[in-house]
Image (cartoon, helix red, strand yellow):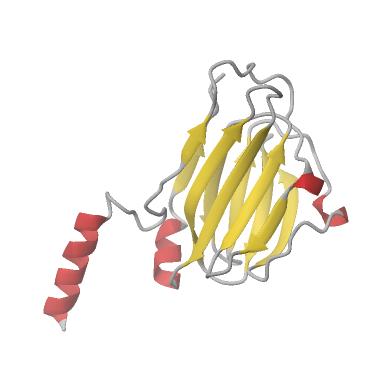
Length: 173
């Protein structure tokens, strides 16, 4: 049994740089055109155009429509299980007045500002999940942006490992 676990750990260590425990094969990416204007002021989250919905197979797709591309960071926390998306400059919004969360895997979505003056969207999870993909697409003509996130289920052990990681993404300015 110990031999099997040791070999499994060795295989996992070899594959981790390729797939990663916390992110999927596609990794995070950003699609930005160089002609996009630089960040000006605070971005607005267009909640009516945004969505949180379950995928046909296990997982959740989160589409956040923004008035412009902004730097963001994604991290996972425990007690309770949650994913937080931290934005550098996001205009305050009351997410409770909108019903854009259609997922059974996300209990609720809340907005708050951190002590360091960063805007945070908190997604409370019903079960452990990891970030499969993160993709920020910026519209070249309007400067608006869409942040697409896909979460997939994982074990609690992997989630605990992922909760120690942070993913930072920036838009070109």
